[in-house]
Amino acid sequence: MKRSIYRSKKLSRMIQKELSWILHRHIMDPRMKKIMILHVDLRRDLSFAKVFFSIFFSYSKMISFSRKEKSSKEVVELLNDRQFLKMVRYLLAQKIEIRMIPKLTFFQDRSIEESIRIDHLIKLTTKNRVFS
Image 1 (cartoon, helix red, strand yellow):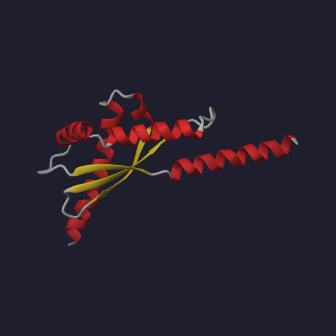
Image 2: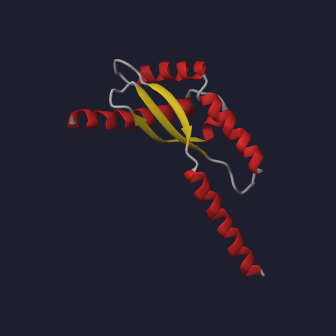
Image 3: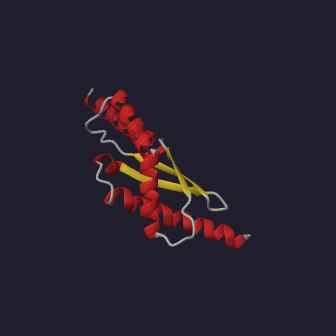
């Protein structure tokens, strides 16, 4: 039991590392450069993996909320596209030597994005107070 849990965690970290490498080095879409793989949750039987990622926007430019939402939805749709997943699994199979590469599903984790946005807003309000 302990051995399978250890193997699952080790494989999760390996998949996380290799997915990051694949998205940043092999995929030519510029939106992939803004993606950070945060966590891979692997099922015990190693057949299915939930991949949690975050998209980083520049808050100094303050892109409109609707534009960020549209961009985020496009990225999620691209990452979960059947052809895209097939290609990523193929590239992952070349990097990781296991019998069966797990089926991947990508989920956006907005916690880091929200904390950056809140931090930016706090800095703006304190900056405005100093000059008021």
